[in-house]
Image (cartoon, rainbow, N blue to C red):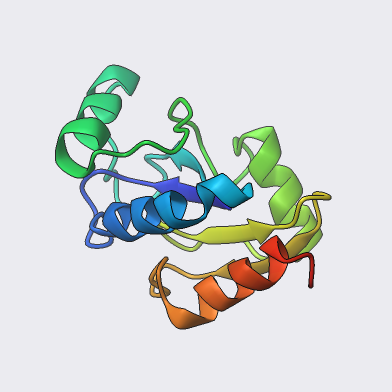
Length: 133
């Protein structure tokens, strides 16, 4: 799963749900890749060091987090440019999620309102981990 994150957003508490599903499924090969971004509402103003400290100290985030980058528009990082081009959907806000299978196929995208540990998302993750898509 690829998700854009922000430390000062109304959805920031989703770090808790992300960490929960990461812990539940990581031993089966599930990975979450977090991409801090200041694109929406200037809600990730800190440095990479400050973001890392916030994630560790506030939510004990253990899934991989990348350096802060843009995830939308002409300056979007290459991964998000590819996700946007393949899905036709761009992150509308922080905590937009793309679920990708083991072969790199984008299975689904979820808006910020979809909680990471929602039944719709976890059932799709479980199907993918069982090799069914």
